[in-house]
Structures are given as structure tokens and as C-alpha cells.
Image (cartoon, rainbow, N blue to C red; front, top):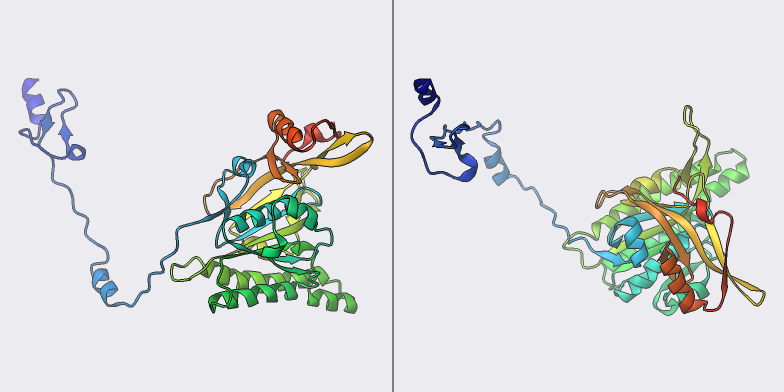
Length: 352
């Protein structure tokens, strides 16, 4: 038996790197290491080829973020809105989509990033935007934009002027809401009665944003580009019926898949089956909006690949967390002495 044990051993002890040790499993004795097998390259001429080839290596800037509220960061597990990307936030009406847009714009200004607003929603409130810290005098604002083409033309114009040095600032484009904006092609289809109006707008969005604007936004991340450009899109959603055997339908953003494909990051606000919920503040018979509770879901994330979701409160001053201590603190600061009334859906908000 002793002789057989000796035969198992390769030979004398050797001193070598830790990961290369050949250790006897019974005694712990270090044995002579067997020589490593060297893998022969399948591409022996590749190094010489690469030396001669004129292959350009593109360098990119480190990823930067536009800061957002602590509540947004906690729910999404993200530092904010990624600079140099297209980001879409979609959902049904009255779920807090514009809160995200305005909060991003206000924080962008604090970081020296110029907000450029494309407004097609008649209900956009500058009074509320001011409460959240967005200074209209330090924005470029296009309100009453009537078509997709018009809004996209503004974006292309400012990107061109940024490249030429005429607009020497980092910028963030904020479009509220692209889902409520028709295209010229849609107008024509409606007049012709072809029934293809929405499909025509989807084609325009794919051509304008996916194939034209997105590459220009992404190019600002290159190290040799002097400034950054970011694009945050608010979009509406519509419900689709369930596909058997599922009993649950889904929410789809308006405009087909063009914007979705162009976006590096996609948020959905509001649930699929559940709705948002409201709490109002009441004093002496007066009733005012206090907060909306909504689901916030990271639906697509090609930056950190983290998927997260949770409930968040949308207030006149931005996002806050959905917990009693935060609600009480916010009430004390802004509505001290007011009573809160919660609607019947308050405890039933979900991301489903």
C-alpha cells in the first residue's frame, strides 16, 4: 500500500504560485506541478493583420447622470436619468409622468444642463413646474407644437447648433407628450379616410427618432464630442386585450415600437390592471390635491440591467416615498393643519 501511495505522487516538492499548486489530497504535500498545456492559436496571423489594419477605436465618456429625488432613486435603483441617452416614460393619464419630466428638468438646471421643452400637452402647468424648481427663464420652450415632424425639427436644429458651437451647453430635450402629437402623415390619412392614421404616425416616429435622432443623441457620448445631449420622452399608453391563455392584457406606448427600440431606458408609470390613487388635503371646506400614488416600473434597462419597481408618490414638489413618516413630514412642511382624504384605491395600487 505504501508503495502505491508513493507512485501516486509526481515527485519532489516545488515552490510555485498558489493557483498552480499540485497538492496531495491526503497529506496536503505540495507535489511537482504538471506542465500546462499551451493552446495553439486558431488565428496565428491576426496580430499582424491588426497592426496593419486601420481600425478606429471609439472612446466614450464615463456615464454621467442627471440627479433625481431620493424617492426616484430608491424605487428605480438608478442614480437618475442617464446622460447621452433616449429615455421614455409611458403610462395612462394622471399617473405622474410629467412629475418625472419636470423633476429631471429642474435637476438638470442645477447641474448646468439646459432644458429644451417640446410641449404638446395643453395641461402642462408652469405654476407647478416653478414649485418643483424649474426656471422657465433658463429653458428653451416650444409650446403648442402641432406635429411630430415639427417637434423633431426643433431637436435636430439644436443638435446641429450644439455641434457647431452656437449652443455651447449640455442639453436635455423634454417632450410632453409625444403620444398626444399627430404627424402630418396622420392628418393626410384622416382626410383620405384610409384608416391608417395611427400607423402613419408610427412610421414617422420610427424614421425620425429611431433612425435619425437617436444616432445623433448617442454620438454625444463620444469622448471627442464637446457637449452632451439627453432626450426624455413622455408618452401615453393604451390597453391591449389579453392573448390566450393569459387573462391579463398589457399596456403599450403610443407610436408603435419605434421609440421603445430607440430608448436605452424605459419606465412605465401606473399599473396594467390597477390604477393610480389620489389623496387630497382638506381644510375649512377647501380641498386641494396632495399626492398621487402610482406604480413606477423600470421596464427596459440597457445601462445597468437592473429591473426594479415599486410605489411612489407624485406631489407638487416632486417624488416622495410611499411611507407614513415621509407623508407626515411632507404634510407638516406644506399642508400643516390640513386633513388628508385617501380615495378607495389607495391600498390597491400595484404594478400589475
